[in-house]
Structures are given as C-alpha cells and as structure tokens.
Length: 73
Image (cartoon, rainbow, N blue to C red; front, side, top):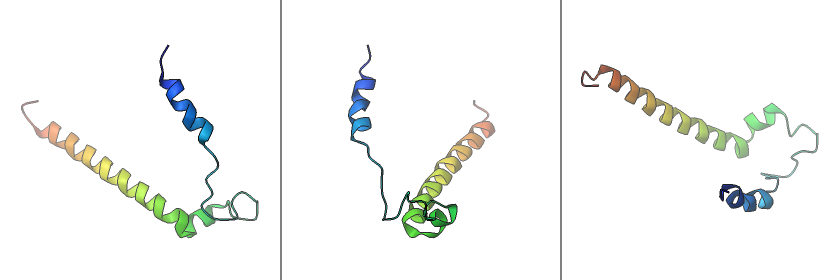
C-alpha cells in the first residue's frame, strides 16, 4: 500500500471554492469569458502562467535545437 493517496487526502478535504471577489457563480454574467479576460483579478494570473509557459517552452526548444546541432550526441 502506498502512502500517496493518504498524503493527498488532507488537501482534498481542506479544499473549498476559491472566490477572487464577490459575484462568482451567481449566473449574472460573472462567469462569462469576457469577465475573465477583462478583470485584473483574472488577467494578471493568466498572463503570469502564459509567461511561465513561454519561458519553459522556449528553454526546452532551445535545448532541443542545441542537441540536434551537437555532433557528439
């Protein structure tokens, strides 16, 4: 028996809906795509994730191209 499921159980039990600001999930337009793209509470974290993905992806592509050019490998 592995302990991994037991280690993750407290996280699953302690999770609750994250509310960035009032009005989420009430069906009055706050769940629309425009809301997520226009409010800074959602836009800044999304931009940070995209920037991190671009940096990691760029580093991966750069390393991959360097390996292909290296005659020793």
